[in-house]
Amino acid sequence: MTDDFSTHGFYAKLSEGELSAIRCESCSSYVMPPTSICKNCLSKNLEWVKVSNIASIVTFSEIHVSNKDYQSRTPYIVAIVETNEGLRLPGIILGVTADKVHIGSPVLIEINQPSSTFPSRYYFKLRDRASD
Ligand SMILES: [Zn+2]
Image 1 (cartoon, helix red, strand yellow):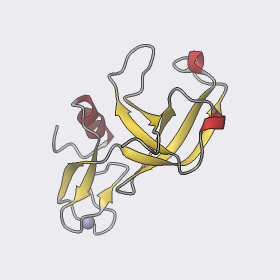
Image 2 (cartoon, helix red, strand yellow):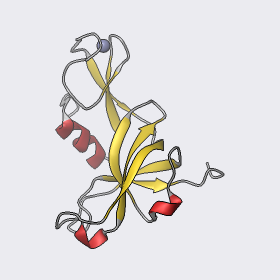
Image 3 (cartoon, helix red, strand yellow):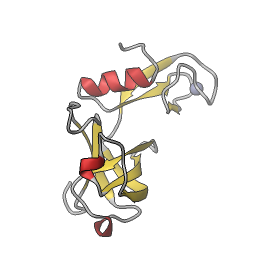
Image 4 (cartoon, protein in one colour):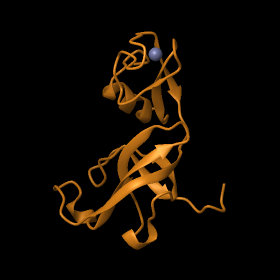
C-alpha cells in the first residue's frame, strides 16, 4: 500500500493510524489531494510522509441538513483546516457549537476507525491554545 499514491492510499495510511501526505522527493512539494505525479515539477518520484496532526481553521460552516449517515449528528460543524505543513483538509469538528469556533482556532486532527454511527476516518477537535 506504500506506493499507492492516491486517495485510497491516504485512507490506507489512516487505517494504520498515520495522517500522511505525498511529498515529491525531487522538489519537496506536497502533493495534495493525492495523485501519482508532482503538480510542481511533474516528477513521479514520490514518497508518503507523516504530517502534523496540529492544524488551524481556515473556514467553517454549520450543517443543519445532511445525508442519512450524518443527519443524526446535525447541527454539526464542517471546516477546512490547514496543518503546520500548509496542507488543507476538509472535515468535521466534533463536540462544539458554531459560537465556539473561529477562523484561526487551533485544532487537533484525530483518527478513528469508521463505524456505522460515524463513517469518517478522521475528525477535528478544538484545541485549547494553552495546552500543547
Ligand atoms: Zn516535485
